[in-house]
Image 1 (cartoon, rainbow, N blue to C red):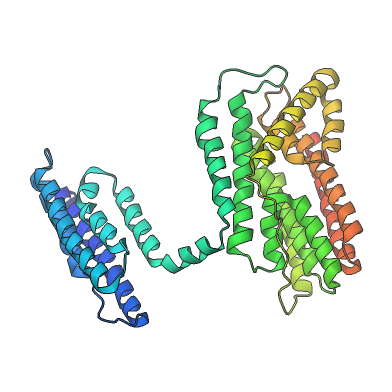
Image 2: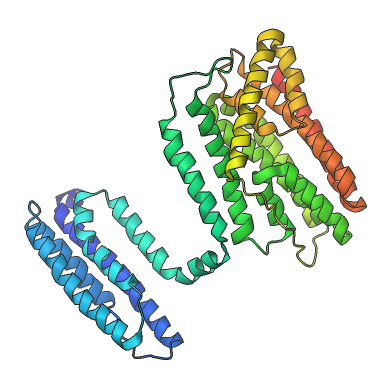
Length: 429
């Protein structure tokens, strides 16, 4: 170990620079060879391979090390590199009519590796190199994804970035709204986090697992909305005639993801409550997931059944505003109920809200500044989930075909009883 401490740091930095430059060069050679095999013009010009990029990385390291204060030599080297790359790019356009700039940008990044290694944390440089390799290597994948994405998605995402990156930071944090003891920043932060979680699930369903089976639909849909997913899968089972346990399995797995989503939100907004409820949440997640997997392997289907995901984009501005309105409404109702009726009123309210959208209510008790014990808040969350499970059971009995109705309805009943038993345990703590 003493020998390692005696090695000059500049020497280690140079070795890392050479290694990373070679790695980029290897990738460039591999990509060039594959493109030439697929191209009719096998003699099309290409810029450098492993040795070329290793020299570029070494040159950037040397010129920066010689004069790190004024950077004259480093800038001069960058200008010379730009001229050479410009000549190559001009000849490439003239001969092949190809306008791609990927290799040129990668060359400039390689030239900058030396200064990055010397001045920045090593992990940052490695992360940059890994990102470059992924972006270059997965060109076809990114192209396929971009072709699938509707143009409206970019508009919606732009609106969300404004809501999350512009509006959220400027909202006041130290001004609390009367009756709910929350600031506008805390309210809008809740909307942003819930919408982001739902949006990730929506994107995975819509663009990455477009042809996924019903099980994947259940898993991802549970993070999006377990109630909506239950309705969709139940209706699908009736349309196809059922006959297998896959639809019941997907419904139960969607509810397992619902328990997971609630736990994640609990950790985000009330870590102390989440730690207290972690054992109970783990029991519910494991029990529900086990029931769903048991139903799946009990009669595993020979082919995939496709289920269309919900078409509603959770990042639509009107959806976010509606959620914010519901959150404020439930905050006022919850505050009034606790102030005038105490814990007994909260018990009744939690059960009633389960027959609506439970997220605004749950996030309110997770984030709200109520003078209540943690076990009371945890019990209220479980009670809201119980009534929500009852609502989903009603949907199953109303929309699913007979086989799915029996299996999913029975499993939901057992899961609801387990949830109720755990609510009693929390109350007796």
